[in-house]
Length: 317
Image 1 (cartoon, one colour):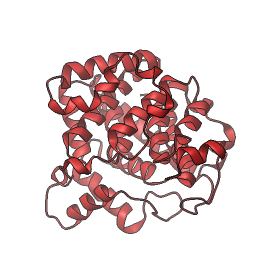
Image 2: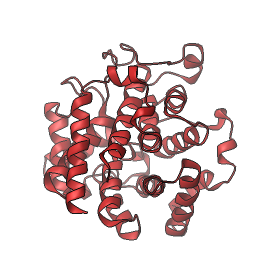
Image 3: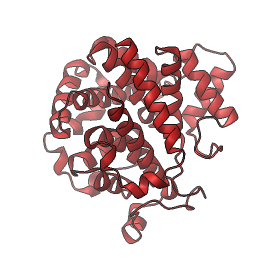
């Protein structure tokens, strides 16, 4: 896989994340009056401009493990997550400042050696935050590059990848749908085509699963036409997936996409990261405003992670 695609993916995700960090939890109405228009510091977490959060940290923790091990090694990935949680590894400034409750609980369970890695994730219906969706792209891109498809076997691996922290079926299906769409982008389709084919594949694979009913709106051919007022941007995984897809369907470049996602309010960093990862793959690194990339913390480090990941995939594929 071309390192440029992976750079677009990771930098697109990280820039969206960093744009959202200062206004995380802000209401949509507040952002209507004071919209995000570029990188800024301070705000919700008091971090310098360009600082990314757990969305990017857990994504690169997974990428580093896959590159070093040459495979998806769930225990090694969880060791990286634990290193991030306990020692602030894989962070933008040397400080871990954001973590979801479900992710924290899973990592703590792993640290106590209570369960194997893929059994650490919460299975309760109340634990369907977006913490696995935001870090699923390393699994998706690795599996697609090395196997040439995202089918049943690959979706099972993606579900296991989600289950490291989020093991309920709704979280797994959200990661599966997102991965099926991403696979279509990787073969060169624009987002409208990728979404249509990805959802068709999702209906074939998940159609008989009762929990697929939570994704009914994404199956509606008029989903893109929904008004913004009907798009929620909370930390619930279905809301995040819907918001990211809606933003992608209603924009045609990275900058517009990222700002639309952030200014929805709520879980701003994750909505923009989930949308931004796909947008970076579609539009490329060159579509991301230079001033945003120049402000992004540890850009060189992120690019090296991508290059190492691309090299390892190329050696295996």
